[in-house]
Amino acid sequence: MKRGAISIEMIILIILALLTLVIVAAAFTGGMSELWKKISGISSAIPEADRIAAKATCDQYCGQGLKDIYCNPSFAGSIAGKKCNDFTSCASITC
Image (cartoon, rainbow, N blue to C red; front, side, top):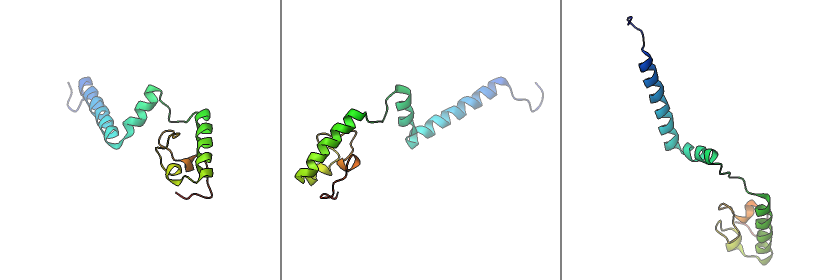
C-alpha cells in the first residue's frame, strides 16, 4: 500500500460512521418521527369526510355558544388534536 492511500475498508467505515451520525442527529431533533410516518405510510392529512363532520360539529358548538368545548383540542369530534377554530370561525366565540 502506498503512503497516503486510503483502503476500501476505511472508506466503508467512514461512510457507516457518517450515516450513523445523521441518524442519531435526526432522532434527537425529531426528524425520525416524520421519516417514520413517510416510511410506514401514515399521512397527517385529514380525510375530507372527517373534516366536513368536524366542521358541522364545530358549527353546532358555535351556535350553542359552547366556548369550553369549541376551544378545547380534545373535544368529542376532534381530529388529530385540532380545535374547532382550525376548521371554522365563530364570531361569537374567541379562543
